[in-house]
Image (cartoon, rainbow, N blue to C red):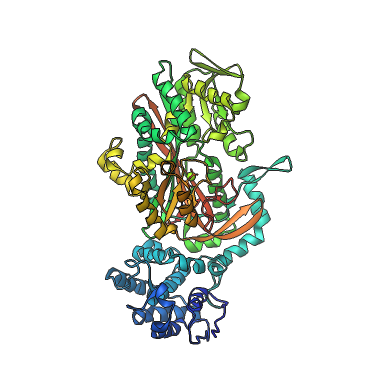
Length: 640
Ligand code: ADP
Ligand code: MG
């Protein structure tokens, strides 16, 4: 009955077409040509009362179609004639933003139902977003947030965030900039693949018993960001590090929280047992060193980068990230020259990625014995070996030798004499853990004994067990409580970092479980369920959450936290894995890397410097780089 076809051009095609289809209209709506959606939407409003499905998604109680008409006509003119209408667009954006401020477009308030005007405005803003990238993001925050809010509606997402749609030209006259980029990349892919390897963007793969290097999964086009944001996240990471450093000094405090989890979590239990011995020991090392990575995702409807988690152990991709920035810079100077000029952007270069080497170097010096070495404990096979080796190489450049090994290889080869740690006959100044953050990484009892021996020794460790213990996600939840976080930082400081904290709920009180489960049931897409685990692949999303919670006893649930879901607006990502191109709707996670060193209760150093951008497919909920979903990326900033 309905003859609507998938259209060749973007404006007014699948989203509106698809939505109209799903309404099962009892009348016929025909797409006469690409750009006639205004008339169709008017028709839709006229008949909406008769439509059974309409009220599921839409409200027609308030439509502002007529006020959108001038904006629509401007865009239509531009699409038809291929002319630049930027000044007109700016004026319309101001008007639209005023309408939203005056609360005439209701979506921000009433999240469940879209009006037909909302749908048209989204379509127009999507066109603006593509014709003038970052115009909304930089100048019309309210419009941008409005767009984000509407698009995070699950029903619309399926239409808007599919690659085919995102790549479509807008009209025969207005090409999609993504296609120009795609052309350049496809043409030069073998070159880009080799360049990545020349640049040191490497990963070690294992196939059929063979090990070989190839490019580390990498993005071929960086994320656009305003540099003020990076500055802000840096400041907040210094505060976060201060909190972590101080939490780690308060054994009684963190065991009062983790103690309950330890009852049924052997990993936490064993770590607390060892740390309890360390606390009592007279010969322990007075210093604590920890390299921290603070992760953020952009919550578009708030226009705020929200903290995903902070990490205190085995921080990876510090080096590769620096290489990727240089790689993108090279591409912008050459193959993307035109794009760079058009968009007035530059890739940030002056980043200090040697911060991890700095951190270990400073820690090494505190031990004060030039003959001692650094012990690096890793897994048996490490795909990300080059990223680890650069640290070794950086230390070697400073005249410091390292020994790379595993817990298993240390069995029978490590001893502690009066607190002096010796491995393979050499004195150890510093132990750097790139493994040991999950239970199965301690393969047997002897591995646990080795960890205990290391912790009780005078050698420095990065991180020492106390900071590893305050890395648990449960503490992230506890820090939302003002009185708790203000034990460690001032009220002003806590207010500042809390701006980027998501809501988190715990299962601490059994009488509140039903209420929490009911809240998630209402909108499972708005939450993430997380156990006390690190390393990716452990969380539950969407329809997985409720069944998992119902499987657990009330006591078992205490090990989980429920976190508000952060929802970014995806962009088109160009990802390269082992020379193959993958074009997808993607989102990016930004991390700030830093470190602190304590001596007893004094924080000696607290610095940040490095950044990591990881980009992953929008439709994959997690996606680590090592797991093959995410790629290492960088960011570009405006050139003025
Ligand atoms: P892990 O310790 O396993 O790295 P994370 O808390 O970092 O656990 O979660 C893994 C990934 O899941 C993150 O990198 C992010 O992509 C996604 N994720 C985690 N929390 C959220 C959230 N609140 N909203 C959206 N995505 C999230
Ligand atoms: Mg993580």
